[in-house]
Image 1 (cartoon, rainbow, N blue to C red):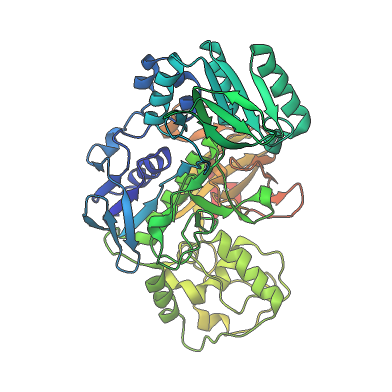
Image 2 (cartoon, rainbow, N blue to C red):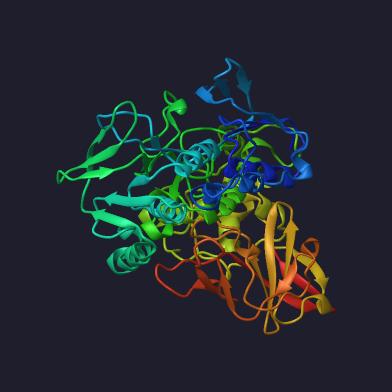
Length: 536
């Protein structure tokens, strides 16, 4: 993979995607631009430890791995516009940057209150500069008003009261953090803060700031005047996506992506971090933004994987967009293969299959009665649209028997040029004892091979729910080998748990234990002549 990669946003998400892309073998030029003057750093401490003293500042930046030593970092440089058709980004310095693949990781900015009154003395907490300015202000502030009882608002209040400030929290909810924690837990949060000396004005909103040149007090909706030499506005945030306007993207709440973090309506562009809006299980599949530190690393891995497939093919030096891939797949369809309509069930099956096999849009002749498909039946049907470029099809070599496969409409098997699964030797049997797992790659197909109580089963490293790297999650057993290069861990049962959202799949069937039902793609395996063999 040698195309030019542009990462817009020198954030944690941008850093993690860059690391992932380099880890997948990318050796071409890579540029990271960021609007702040510093390298990527850890943001959660900004509302806690970083407000206590300067000594914590040097601990905020993330270490930069050697694989990124040749990356060009353009700091204090923001993206101001983009032409996704021409694959160009214009920066605040007036430069035009071209790319073959782009990562959008521009994150969020704090929402500000549009209220009358002086501006001096009003603070937000999002960047390192914000935290440093607030820290300096808190040193000599006799009184502080925190507007908003969110996580950041409560964290700032807890720190400010320990610095000797008189702190008042103003929020419209009944209890602090009520929206995320509920009333009961929110009441406990308020009790703990009250015991520390924080005063709350709940079910109140500010209507104006008072002061001569700088804030001296906050006027509330009840008419009460709260003294405040410092005001901290913790009233939410807004995605930094305006620079993408004019490209036909859905920017109503961040950047709309699919389950593989590919930006909808753009070619060779992925998004990661707080700015990305993607289908989420907890929102019943509705696309949402997830503003959570723990989610960034998982999303970045998926975005990096997707960008690799979008930008390059197996050879690593031919740039293929999604549209060119579609044209190639259509041209590789065998003669006589016609598209036929098989009803709504077939359409739903194709959508499920295509979501799991990102490289293989399903053809129209999937069986109309097939609502629970297997990996082999998906690969068999995928031949017409993917041809020899498909990693599943490429691994096969003999036609399926009439008793194995359901009756389908469309061209005959001989016209499809289809061939069945090939056995692959994974490792000696003694290296995969019961309760152990081994990660392998066959072509571009990543598999986790498990020994479940003596039964061998291979699982595709892709959660059918949201595309998580399913087999990279470890079970609750003890580590067999601590060396990550050996990629081998203990596995203590028949349950495989997704590292993103906790979906549990029972092995060897691959089915979920809860509703709605999903089925992970599995391949049969066995021990033969002292070796672990998997049919793919």
